[in-house]
Image (cartoon, rainbow, N blue to C red; front, top):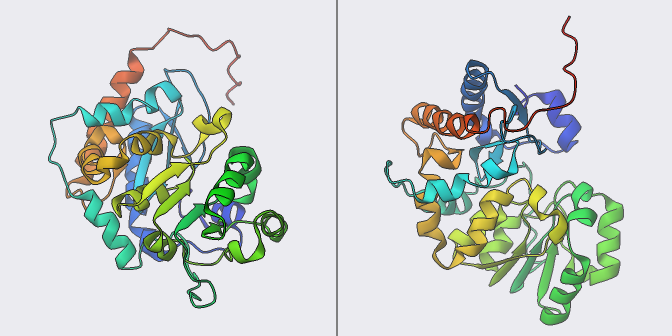
Length: 301
């Protein structure tokens, strides 16, 4: 299991420490791995790739303190939320209020030890939430970022991801002004609450949190790379339904077909996982033998 493996986490997030309040997802990870094994499916934590519709691998990661499942095939994973929206065979739960309470109770942060020096760094009306250094230059549109700065002038803050190098932060300050680039350790959720509008990407869970707080949300991704975002298949539909975000989230996230699992809300979360695997394997089976992998299988010892 990789979600809470110290060696894996050190490789991925370095000196940062994951919030202990996410530990309850470890039980979900264990159960999901068991379901994958039962169905002959491989699994991978926090990885995105493209396989055939009869996919071999189930990906999973954290999303707004929930456990998020999606297969490594774009066609099938992008159908999850529309299928969940039209699913009537489930109780609609109040996910939106849960996400709001994460912010007000200070449990939303994925990482420990966030700064709160708000007097030195007062909030502004517009907030740009950046991904980590390894994604920023490839996935974010510099022209859009310059446009945002030009339109909002001095009334915008750029929030670097906690996993951002000092070199990248220096480049951001050169581009947008030192007074407009927050320290990477600052609490993003404070600034979301104080903002009027949040610019974010399909790589970030901030679209979920900002939308349930009633904030206007808008992406600034590079279009050609947008489909590879970790949360593209959630955020894409959320951007389109931001006018009714709370109702949309409640309806969609409550369905097993969404791939969203949250034991704090889903009283019988194992049953929800079971139903998800029934749904996703049925979709997968439709494509069996449609496309044949020409690569030779590895020799098994």
